[in-house]
Length: 407
Image 1: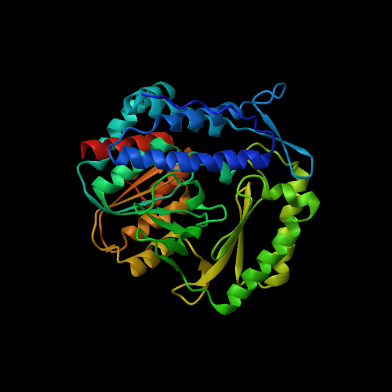
Image 2 (image 1 turned 120 degrees about the horizontal axis):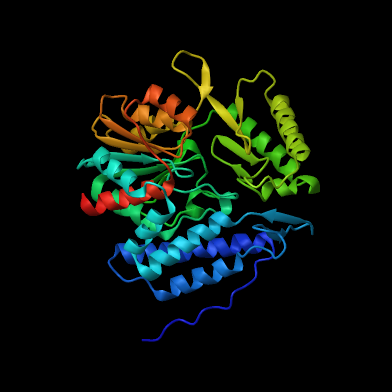
């Protein structure tokens, strides 16, 4: 049998090269996942190419754990690519040595791994779920410093797909990211047709047949959002602000919402520059919506989320949340929310409305939350007393993969 010759490792010296290299891994990983789900042995060339990318992501000599990359204007940006390297390393174990080798690796890396799996097995039992709602980042995907490079690992995709196919009727990934641009479809390794994607916090969707839909936006709000996006584009095209399109979430013009990064997990941008961008965004928003009737701004510390409001049942206004998304997707896709049980997985209080909406018509709904601190756990328990808490996305996806195999 002839083996693939490894491509020559290519040094990644610019941010554009980083994005291109990680984009290429999405296609490789998705192909490997499809082969595994079809019962085939993945092509050895996949691991060869992923290993070449991993080699190219090595830290820059003299920069500690950081990799120094060139920006388009000639300046440099120090970025931490530890998470990208970690995900690639896990995939190499998975593709070269198999699923059990990966599970042994995770057991060595994660305290109490086996105990968490056992708790999860007892929690899920032998239920067959109608709807499986899951957030992405922080829930089934570890947070990265840049959304565009947060490509899902092949192992995570395999485990999620197996669970979706064997234990659920309607698997739905519900994320605040858009469908494209970069969005969920640019970073997932799940083959098409297996999951419904509710993007832009569920205001837009792609069903398993490839059909797209979107929640109608009133003309006045649509015009305001268009004007906002145009002004934000002009803002970040100023040379001193271009860096904000290249870190974290970048600029994402979603359906009914816009996200602009003001900082990343590495703290790459000086504090005064980040604060200056925040002030500029608030000024732009206030000039378009002086009374604060149409936009809400959420500052996560890393991102500025500018969200279109919607009318609430009492005749006031509210932010569109994932509970509204569940109700909207149920209307459009006929999910049968009244028929449980359902499973909802998240990592922040923003995912609580998703679980509550799934149970709103009386259906049994199990909730799993990932990586929460004590304060967040207490907040979640106040709304979802029986929620299960797991320490990381790796534990959750491993649990779902095992539940699929043993269910």
